[in-house]
Amino acid sequence: MPLMQPFASDWDRPASQNSEQWNWLAVEIAEIRRCAEAGDQAHDRLALILLDHLVEVIIGREVNAQLAFQIPDSTIEEMQRFRDSGGQLDGQLSQLIDQHVGLDRRAKMDNHLDQKTKFLRQRGVLTDHERDVLDRLHEYRNAAYHRETLEPDLIADLVLAYRVLADELLARHKPIAWVMASSDPAPIVTPHQLRGRLTEGIDIDLTSMARRFHDHATKRVQAVSTAVAIAQQLLGSKSSGETAAAPPDDDMARMLTGLSDTAKHLAPWTRQAEGLKSKTSSLTGLMVPFLNLDRALSRIEPSVKRLDMIQDWWEQRRIDDLRGK
Image 1: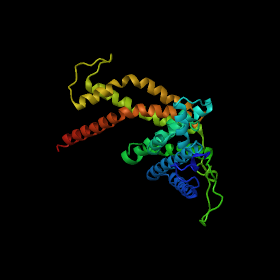
Image 2: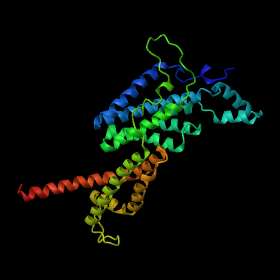
Image 3: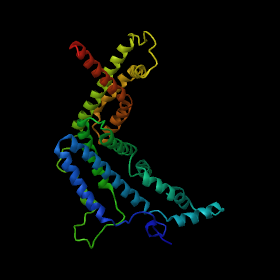
Image 4: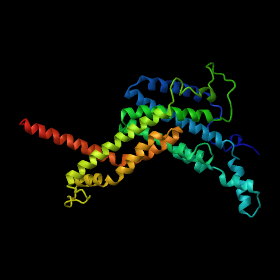
């Protein structure tokens, strides 16, 4: 009976000794560093996209390493049938059955990053905060690549933060086998040789990083506050918070009403933004409150940007009227 899943006939994971993947990850890390050091928006976006891919690969390799130490599916099925038929198993064997990751869940993990990070959190490889921060990286990647909704200066700071976190993931990864030799004449790269490459040459100052994320958050809260004030003015809001008359039921009025209703969140958002300056004990301890505020602001910011565009249009119309156009 096979002792480990990789030696079972029903093992469905990639080969454990895959040296080539670590070789091209070394190239990818070098490219991330080159892009991050270029200092322009286009290269920062590319660095964030490459970091997202790098993290996903490392997480996938860690998942496979964890799964490799399972008892084979066929053996678990035999034990399950024995237990279901009334057979007695000791507590440790019953726990192995209950914690076994079967084919269906493995397939789900293959297709969804959040399922991989959930599994690694359950195995104690990731903390809740680390899982939250790493899952958010994929959303940031989409925002930078597909939607272009991230501020350029924020992207640079996100790249720095995720370089540190990705390096920590590499440092703790333990492959199930080390490649000692290969027919390929190219040098063999192993995971431990990649440790530190992502952060080589950068000064990781948590106080400075906390200040920058505080500045990003404060700027965004202020933009929302300005939009709320304009919306209340356009709706004819009174100082008591009551409206002078019911607004018309159209898209514009609903947008303004939504902005006006956001006023009650401004004070706590301001406190959260201000509190980021003191989050200097750990990088995840800084990123989690920033991400929480980021999610809250992201829900209303499309309306803020839309109102800003409408104001620009109104202003241009006013200028054109004055010029007699």
